[in-house]
Image (cartoon, rainbow, N blue to C red; front, side):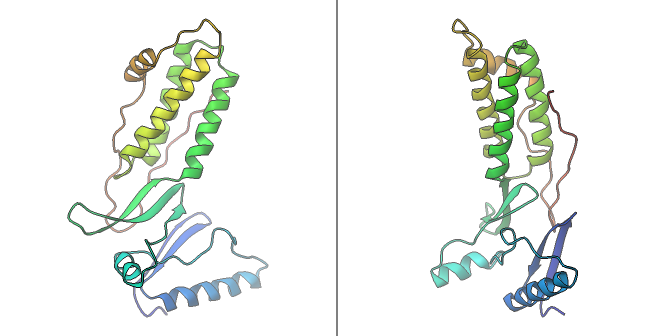
Length: 208
């Protein structure tokens, strides 16, 4: 039994547990390791850790002089301690850097493989990719990260089109115009979570 409040957020075999008191978290982790060991299983050593997090973490760590609270990744998002406009606590979320880099790398590879297709076709395909990204990651507080992601895709598209020929004159102005026509507008699609993580997953688009 926990001595204070406790919460578990789970998706498939990934989960995050929150405890009001550190001693409860440590006891839970020890008991979980023992229970998994009974079935020949173990926790992932690089994904399992105790993190001081929550509304009192920032003040507590500042008092102790140990810096900002640690962030953690869960379901493709980095969660960190943030503040509201009025100075209250909120859970900040942004696309995990590892997920962003991996997605951009895959887009770059796809553009290279299909660089000889019609530019219009590539633009339309990228619009579907961006729409899928926004459907998942467009949660409150991520606007600047979403805009940076879309800007990176524009750069990849310009480079891919210019490398098709030494005479290619694809301009940023043209890409911007095409993006306005065929790409979804960057905007927040999900509401603020009231008690726990709220995400909505939809289908992804691939070019083959």
